[in-house]
Image 1 (cartoon, rainbow, N blue to C red):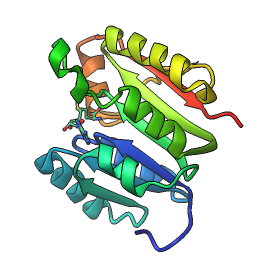
Image 2 (cartoon, rainbow, N blue to C red):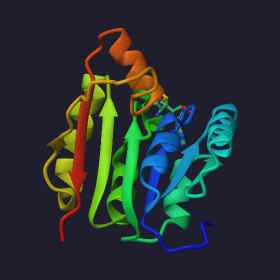
Image 3 (cartoon, rainbow, N blue to C red):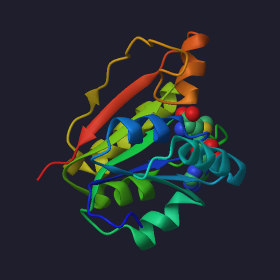
Length: 182
Ligand SMILES: C[S@@+](CC[C@H](N)C(=O)[O-])C[C@H]1O[C@@H](n2cnc3c(N)ncnc32)[C@H](O)[C@@H]1O
């Protein structure tokens, strides 16, 4: 898709695409693929990338699950980013969560050794459940490494739009990173 072999990072659930535009501009040596199931959001994020004229970032409108199951080769990714996934509070809706046992196994398989999985959320229950699932079924991801909150220097100096919203409303955010072991 990119016409080169730069390391690839995938963001699942890019929303309006703030991470995709800032990360791709800051890291021209990497490629960034964003997947977003809401087509209006995906279009918005793609428009942001087109205006920024970056050549190392592409948005896909669609569901991350088949993308990982059918298209992403094992041990191929530099990073997977999941920021503020929808919580789907009700028990019978839980299977819609972007972070679940199936996806965590897919992400762990897709990462190269040393590759990173970033998970940020403002939902403590979802965060704790995810950390527990990873420890149980994907020990190759190692231990959770806390990621620090960085003070914003300007209005768009946040990792994602949802991070900006959480900070404005003083909602705590749980930030963690995993690095796949050999
Ligand atoms: C709460 S929003 C957060 C958006 C963005 N990450 C942020 O932090 O601003 C979660 C996003 O994940 C998307 N999403 C949910 N399930 C998805 C899936 N299976 N594949 C791709 N995107 C998904 C939703 O459409 C929504 O835009």
